[in-house]
Amino acid sequence: MSSHATKNMFEKYTLPTYTRIGPIFTKGRGSWLWAKSGKRYLDLFPGWGTAILGHCHPRIAKTLSAQAKKLIHLPNNLYQEEQALLAKGIVERSYPAKVFFANSGAEAVEGAIKFSRLYGNGRYEIITMTNSFHGRTFGALSATGQKKYKQPFKPLLPRFKEVRFGDLESLLKKISKKTVGVMIELIQGEGGINVAKRHYIKKIQDLCQKNKLLLIIDEIQTGMGRTGKLFCYQHYGVTPDIMLLSKGLGAGLPISALVVKRKIADIMKPGLHASTFGGSPLVCSASQEAFTIIQEEKILNNVTGMSAYVFNQLERIKKQCHIIKEIRGMGLMVGIELACDSYPLFLECLKRQLIMNSTHQNVLRIMPALNVTREELDEGLHILKEVVDVFERRKSPSTRR
Image 1 (cartoon, rainbow, N blue to C red):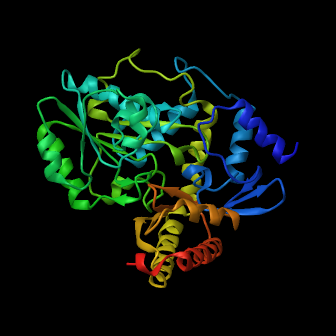
Image 2 (tube, helix red, strand yellow):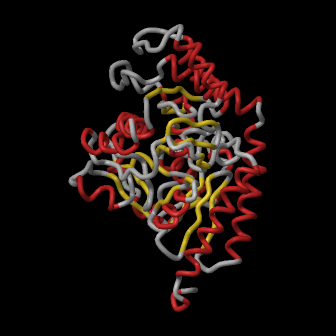
Image 3 (spheres, rainbow, N blue to C red):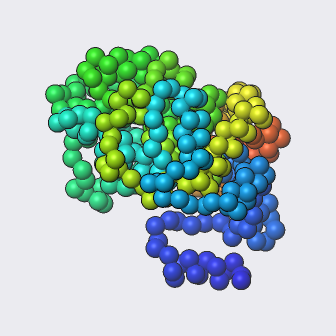
């Protein structure tokens, strides 16, 4: 089938919920994708940040093949080893907790909202942050702090109070007798790679403990080594009451986890929450293997080393131009704030066979595979520099800072 025919099928038979661009991709390996034309693309945002070990890691592929020959799916009223082992692995690597498995980050957020209602016993207000992003389902969308996603679907669920990210005084003023928890991303991903300060998160934990509120930390993007530690909260000296995982948890497969502190977990009783496909043997086996690969291949060491390198190189590029305002992030979660719309630069990079991400209107986002090499980063940064130079020349001197 021709690429033109494939694109026509998308237009004719799928809901237009995405602005699809680029060629037809047919295969991937590591940080690379191949188009039907045979052209090779460097993917520094693989699987929208889910493919933490790159495309088609051979050990993940081997694990999936072996598991698919044994057992693919089992309903959650029956026992299976793979899910139990994965839950044990998550808890042993984080904090004393119990785990519920679903399929997506938004589902994990929905589970946290439902759990907070049970825990609150009459308290139901959740404080969330400006520029946050928690998902597209109704509860997750209600918790999201961006009007552009919420406006078309109002009225949304009530009792979410939005405060300024990083502003403790704003949060203090919103706490009431009906408040049950605070939901926060330690690094806002879709919101533009905004990194919370350590003392701010410590103060929020203190407030939560003082007022018997749930500290709900959304690690859907930051979990699984993205920031140089297995879970981002480990940088902050806090422990969440609820941690939300997805994206990298399945190394490219759909899985999410609601990780609830053990001492409160048992208020969730049988029949109160469920997921038909959540935690299938197939995806749980892949997730277990992802944890093993992270340990055996010393992936966290690579994240730390490549993070220092990429931030250093980006700062060098920034000094040579006016179009880049700020470089921010942690680990291999990188935001490049521009003095212009980022989408045209994203498109130009794609033309030059580099895949990144444009978010929050003026931020380019890089979230490469955690096993990315220096050579791959060099190639991507070279293309990015060429594109920045092109747009730098187009930029009027009167608009430069």
